[in-house]
Length: 50
Image 1 (cartoon, rainbow, N blue to C red):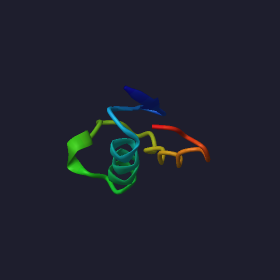
Image 2 (image 1 turned 120 degrees about the vertical axis):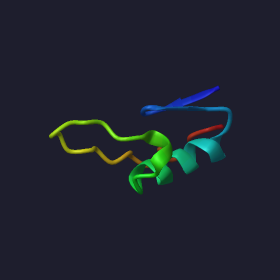
Image 3 (image 1 turned 90 degrees about the vertical axis):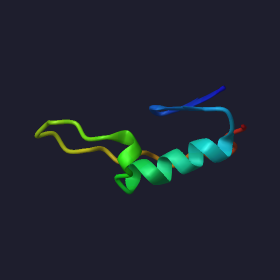
Image 4 (image 1 turned 120 degrees about the horizontal axis):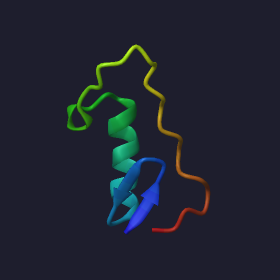
């Protein structure tokens, strides 16, 4: 298992896809009823192993 930011996945490719999906507002993450701004997910650091 890998963990990055708020994502948990089996491999690096899944983490990368999660970052893309989150930053593009994909429906799999749902919506939160809040006035707070949604933070963008940061890119994986160089050398992240997965």
